[in-house]
Image 1 (cartoon, rainbow, N blue to C red):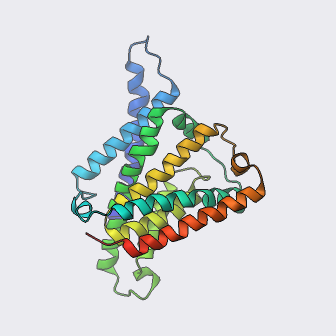
Image 2 (cartoon, one colour):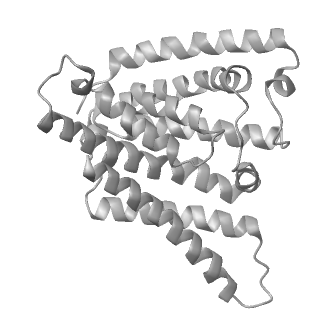
Image 3 (cartoon, rainbow, N blue to C red):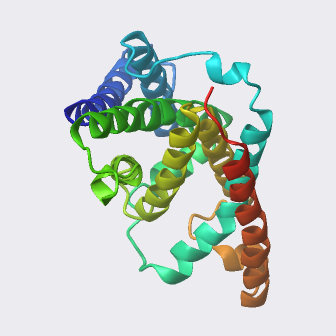
Length: 265
């Protein structure tokens, strides 16, 4: 358990360090180079992701192995992307119509990230890889090992694999530090944890995470108003309902296919 906490604290320290480095480091550039707040934020997120990957891989906190790729899990990766795509509209509907209106304290930052192609490099490409390496490859992996070594009652919830998955999903939601994102992050963390538990690899989670973030980036480009919701996309409650049903018809079969096809290397 203490290793999992260590990994989370290391991840947070890297975010803070990258922010300080980029905020003050970019100011040292020649005065004729205009550095916007957006550029600083994008540089921070890219540096933080790269440092995270280098640190966690070099210290073997997240072990890198080609074994999973060797079993050619192309269908698992494909169904992970399809499941992610199918979950987007139901998740948006859940956040918009079911849970209370939570404060979106990161709205301005997300808008800036989604406004630039370099923001996609950070949010769409590096963030899925870095966050899966930390929260599944390091945090969840250490929690599963801790559970196996400390608990001998598999019939109880504490001895069930969903206990460490829930803990890792909670960490994953809290590090977003944005109440508006936390419910979605927690539920997504449960699914990503399940993918990791079944395969022993972060790659299915990276595929799922990449699809989710890529669609979010595309939607932000199509609907730049940060207050845009499902009504702006589909136009009426009936169409929203139809979109939710259609998406569930994608999501559930994709989960079933993953259940059938996932295996460890």
